[in-house]
Image (cartoon, rainbow, N blue to C red):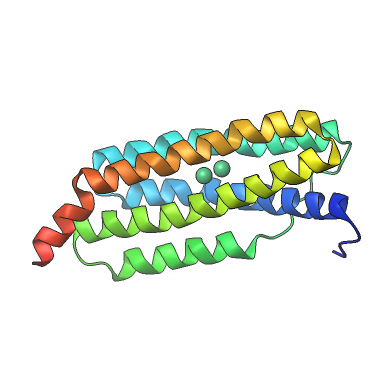
Length: 166
Ligand code: ZN
Ligand code: FE
């Protein structure tokens, strides 16, 4: 896709996030299964429900702007998901698996926060006020998910992994 202007860039980023969120709808149940901690499983389950909303909110923006609901393959999220799978496969004990899952989930959340931050800035610039409101709801949920993962990591999972390794 050739980027002639900011409108094209907004559309490109929106389509990329549409694909990214759809990839996460498939990856999160696998991450939930892989988790060896009830709190972590719960966090992934909650974020799966939120992710379904993220997909439909992007759909709403396509509708508002009269655009096709078309995805643009998100290679970055595909890479982060692939890396996560490799880490879990190579991790031996349960605590290392939990810590690896948190690490990769936080990389994913940070990617999403950066992407939605860009989309919000572009939407503001382009005067897409309705899109700004919708995108802000999503970025807040991504930030909360990230904070929850930090709390889970600091609340014992990483600590336990370190203790066991020592
Ligand atoms: Zn999301
Ligand atoms: Fe997310």
